[in-house]
Length: 200
Image 1 (tube, rainbow, N blue to C red):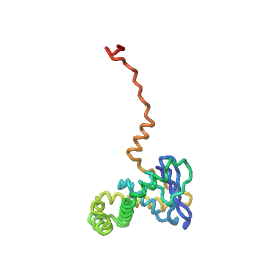
Image 2 (cartoon, rainbow, N blue to C red):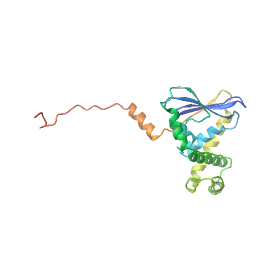
Image 3 (cartoon, rainbow, N blue to C red):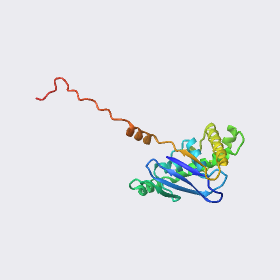
Image 4 (cartoon, rainbow, N blue to C red):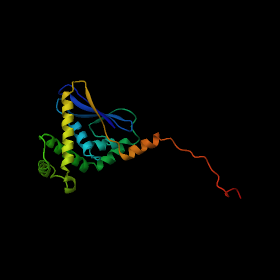
């Protein structure tokens, strides 16, 4: 999945162009455009860096169509709306986890050279709404995600109106296997008659 975030004039309604692997293209609308890193890029970077496959962007890649998405081009797969409803039915708790983690990493990104103790202390308060299994974090991974967020915020701040940032969402193992099968030529072996196995 390929996602493009255009830098629009300040205060216009921002959007991202989402080109899904199934061929459908959507506009995902967000908040107001401005020099600050868009919330959707923040989510994208954090979910990618922490390998969150069942968050907002993983959900979009797997077929979820949020209310803020408008179909632009490309043929939608059969029963796309039904598939989206099925996925949304189980999305809430995982989406909440992704939202909380993204906001947590954004807080860490606001610190200068955060230590492990600072990250864990912040996690104790920021992630307290999550179940214990989901609230466990690796400080090194969080620090790396926070640094990636700082880099993207700096890149975004340098954009002029009309420029854009683009990202590729990591393919799932299943999608990668499907594409590999589609590209790989089929091997056809010549038939060899076994000895002693003729017609009776």
